[in-house]
Amino acid sequence: IPDNHVTKSVKSIDRSFLKNRSFWLASGILFFYVSAEYSITGWLVTYFQDIGVLSDNLSQMMSSLLWGVMFIGRMAGAIIIGKVSRKRLLLVDGIGLTVFFLLVFFSRSELPIIIGIAGVGLFMATIYTSAMALGTESVRGNDLGVSAMTLTGVAGGIITPAAVGFVAEHAGIQMGMGVVVGATVMLLIMILVSTVTSNADK
Image 1 (cartoon, rainbow, N blue to C red):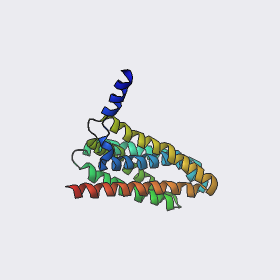
Image 2: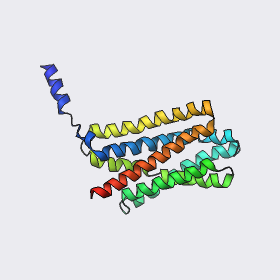
Image 3: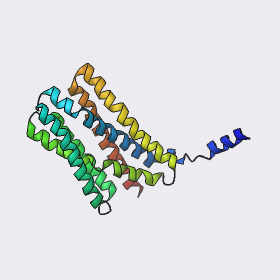
Image 4: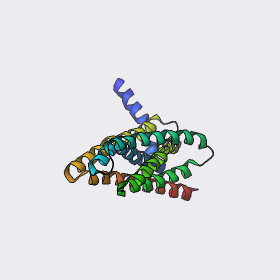
C-alpha cells in the first residue's frame, strides 16, 4: 500500500509546465543572466588587474561601482514596475547589458570602462526579477515549475564562472571573459525570442 501511495503521488505531480514555451524561455533567460552576473562579479577585478588597464585600487573600485549602481537600479526598478511593461523593461535591459558589457570588454582606457561598468550594473538590476515574474506567470501555482526555474539560474551561476576560470587558465583572461560575452549575447537572444514569440501569440 505505501508503494502504491508513492506511485500515485509521483503520477499526480503536475509537469505540464514542461510543455510550456514561456517556461523554457524564462528558464533560459535566468540561466544566462545568472551566468553573466556571477561571472562578471566574480572575475571583474582579476580581469582588470591581469590586462593592466586599471590600477589595483581602481580595479577594486569597479566592483563597488557595479554593486552600487545595481542597488540604485533595483530601487528605481521597484518604482517603475507597474508603469512599464515587464517585457519592454526586459528587452531594454538585455540590449543595454550587452552593449555596455561589450564596451567594457573592448575598452583599453579608464573612462569608457567606468561608463561601461555603470551601464552594466544599471541594466543588470532588474533582469532577474522581470524574468522570474514572467516565468512564474506560465507556471502559476506549480511549485515544481518555479523550483525548476530557480534551479536553472543556480546552475548557470555554477557552470559559467567555472568555465571562465578554465578558459582563462588555458587561453588567458581575455578569452575567459569572452565566455561572459557569449553568455550576455545568448541572454539577449533569449529575451528577443521571448518578446517576439509573446507578441506573435497575441
